[in-house]
Length: 502
Image 1 (tube, rainbow, N blue to C red):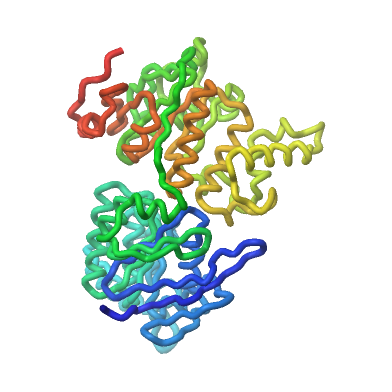
Image 2 (image 1 turned 60 degrees about the vertical axis):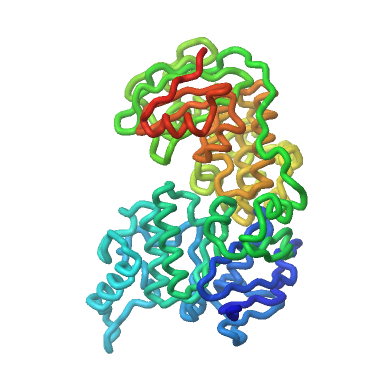
């Protein structure tokens, strides 16, 4: 058995009131992909930040190539050959590819002047090793998410990394881009690089990895060879129980039509979109990234303005709304990106929850903080949000708890229609199951619910009816027995399956 290139032994890390890591041991060997899995808040990101020099452990030891080391900061980690690729890419969009790759270590001549020729030459060599189609001088802000991720990975070539950590690397990638990423990871393996792979997606874990280590509440539950286990066993280790009913479909009686959309179009985004949703119904939207799903619901919420089309709200025609008008009507939108669009990260959970509804908590010009606190307490308990208190910045919470605060923000307004755009992206299986249960309960309470998901099992599992979109058009409508993976794939591939009968 190959000796580990990196070993973490007895790592402990505490924050005020929280033991994030409790005597954690973990290792990675040359040329292997070692998965690190666990629910949000289990300690995965904390452990990797210790390894990358962002946090210093309170106790424990790090061995690198068999010798004890202290990693004081990310630059020290990079110099040792340890590279962390964050889920939220850490690039400067206004700088070039070359400037980003060598940021903090630009080559200079004897007078300290930037050696542009060497910078471009070394960058091109790193890009060529990965088969990148963009060049050293391209501005990073003009590249796609997948290409930006390749810029991050190119640092592993530029600095001869021995260990590369991928934190939820496919969260924003299409299937084609994911395949390219996997090809790159296997190429790094072939070079003897040790890979740490953090993901909530079990299919990726079992396709790509050699070993799996499970964390729960900051404690290692075990390390197993991937070939000797299965998703059920890993899930049981992650959450301490089996996940009998992963999806929850609402047992609803449909009521009146809440929203009807006729011929909605926005040039370059979507065209001639028509559908309706009723009280107690969960309507799913499925399609590949770029299909126009998010753009449609952003138009319904007033973020975008359609070129043409008509909307009917509770039976009466209405003008295209502004966001304020949409909120007043009772439309809520949980956006695709909770960190960029759904939360003010440095504010506490209480202030995030009440932010869109401040008028409801004001007496003249004075905020009723007692009522705000009561709202916070209600939704913290109802949604089982793990937080130390109302003032804890949401940036410090796990992805699942952040998403619950986005939901709380809109549920406290008592909406009639709630739109959930990728509601479980980047969160663990336990939190996903809780959100699926919540979707079912909202529908059973009489709300109309629209769910957008790129995960086919999810959209089929929670929805009563599914609309398929491709290239800005609705290409299929399915319900009952017609809601199958085969029909959805066929529809988005432009071979239109037969719609379900009315």
